[in-house]
Length: 135
Length: 113
Image: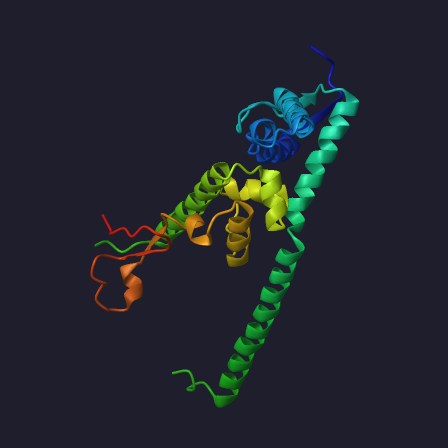
């Protein structure tokens, strides 16, 4: 058993586990790359990423719920760095969303702000009308 | 009929999201398109396709249309099998519609069991 390169806590493990699981949902892409697209290079690249995911799961546990409070990562530093760079990029993609998503969220936020003004304006005017206005 | 709680509506939302997830997976596999390619076609990150297929994202209307293009399906195919049971308490005394309280969102129309 190789010595751990680094140790992570339970919360860090939970984050890595989520990112790995999200990546693993594309496992079938290996077959599609090989059989449908006949793109061997792509299949190898995808497969390598999944193999590295499996190695990481070997360190942090395959189940969603696990007992240990700490997890030693035994991947070689260069492999671990490659996995972490990939998982960080994917996590950042999730957090950022697409440019169109951000634009849509900004539009919704602008609409919300207008309705907040509408609600506060109504409240202010009703207050001016007196306590019986809302009866 | 017992009044339905907001938790029931939350359950319904979960069911809708999971059905969408299943429909995306089925459509993508039928079209033999990788997550990467589906994402590329839809102008989304691959991670977004993953989240949708895992039922961890509630898609917006624009996302539904884009993902449909990404997996070479009609948007309505991604909504197939969904239904929303109307809480009778929200009918404000009106009679329930003939045939039940469910409004189909996709191609399948189901009655309340």
